Image (cartoon, rainbow, N blue to C red):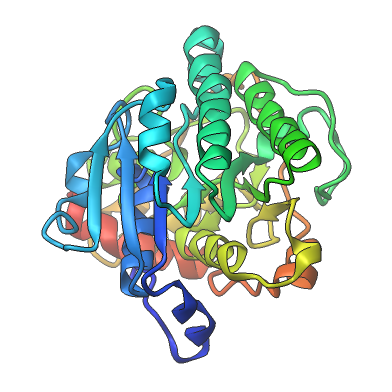
Length: 339
């Protein structure tokens, strides 16, 4: 429950056994879940993290595994990237500074990590002969495009420094294929949630932040009137997309960007309602907590809904967790680990 396990119909991922895979940002929320899944399939995993946002506790159970190696280092250092890529078969590049508000408050550092660091990793991976480079892109790339659902080849203008950096990543990846024949796949993540997601700090994601507040009997604050909507995506769907991207033998599937989502939208008001319902199983008083409403955040897009048809067609992607199924799993984990 709450973490990705090999299943009978996942035998296609057994090809990852003994493959040497570098996960940058491997001590972060998504990265640590990817490390866990890869180790479960017998991969030899290297984690590169500088622990600016990642946490040692996220990978503490892996450190005694002989198939797991931790490199403490920063992707802004090219030599660190080159050393990490030596003898690596595949790279899952998750290292980045997330958060639209953080990028608005500090665009320089966001640019350094997300663009310069990304370029360092591309160069290092290419020079080391890495077979495939799968990287975390972002739904923020759709910017001011009002079209719904979001289709990969139709984007608008970015609405934040963070969105600019993630779009530049896609441009660099495309150039590295066209110029050097280096194979990449970009995954545009849509509001990922699940275990190990940090509920604390100024830039905490909305779901764990709301959960912590509700468990503490505090009123959560929604930015706006609560009718903004998101394609909330459970972590196991994201792991599945990464594994499919690593193992696909479809040549047409490579050197593409894919929406990584469930393909359904949920308003923030609906989200709070679900969270209160599922948390009330443990604490009925949570149902009575009132919600506050605040100002809309700068850089926020009103609605986000992904088309996942491209991923279904080229990667045979079939997400297993809806928002409700994922929230039930996540709430169980939050209650056990965050209360």
